[in-house]
Length: 399
Image 1 (cartoon, rainbow, N blue to C red):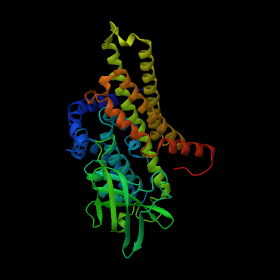
Image 2: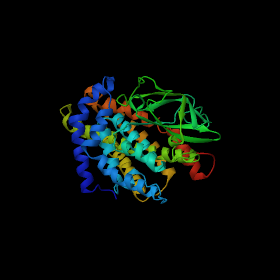
Image 3: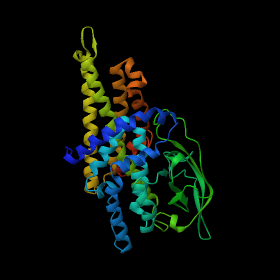
């Protein structure tokens, strides 16, 4: 359970090489906003055959739905037979660019995964297949200017029934991939519940704001998205009927999003550990390597413990996905812990490297800036811990 099989190790190796030769040189331009990452995402998927890997299971699901078979949602990761594979891909991307990993994961796993899991056969064929093949780019639209931690209670984006379908009005903010998305998965209030709509870029009334300027994850373009009386048919309603894609299904998507955060944290911590271990062996002060000083040794041991802790969390998450085990308290709590450990690891690595760690050249300061979002996105640390505690105790509502 705690060892990568040979195939996954091989994938990790080739992804790491791609990150060094293709992704890393693009980081300055991506962070500056002079280039967008979307073509690079498509190149990554095509180079390593994600379209072929996922097309079979997705097409099989389409055929079963059209045959009238009721098929449980296995999730994209589980449907491949090796959920750990995607976790390792996210980890390797996050060693170099957590922002790129986040945008890639949101489009393929969160948006594409939700449509494949809850969509009709026609919706999966039209949007799910090209999203999971990364031929289209997706955005997940839940957060609003006044609806963050209270995503459902404070939601103001509304869908109203009109002749022939629905009219969607409202706005979303902090939307990953917003500036370049082809498809928006939009959560809106419909009567007393939440409905999910698949909204295409270019529909009348859909506009996107400019990319935000951010502390970190600068290579993940983020923006506001506005919906002004956008007319949609039932073919745009996830699942093709009211009641599908509601609040309970949204929480499932939140669980999927939170399950991906430990993989990103794993990549950040592993890079920090590897860089720090090499540095303390090579860097000399007072006539000997700084790794001989006890204070430095304690920091290395601390990084090692953080690395193995998060690594073990990811292995358990992969096992849960493969065996279709639902454990939301673990998902919520482990997301919170992994995010905190990633932030701490990045700051420890900078401290070990001293002034060199503070410079852009090594990339550690970028990891520190990027890691902070893991404590804020997909539910803040406090919200995740409260959700876990409330479910364990059996009191209150959880998000």
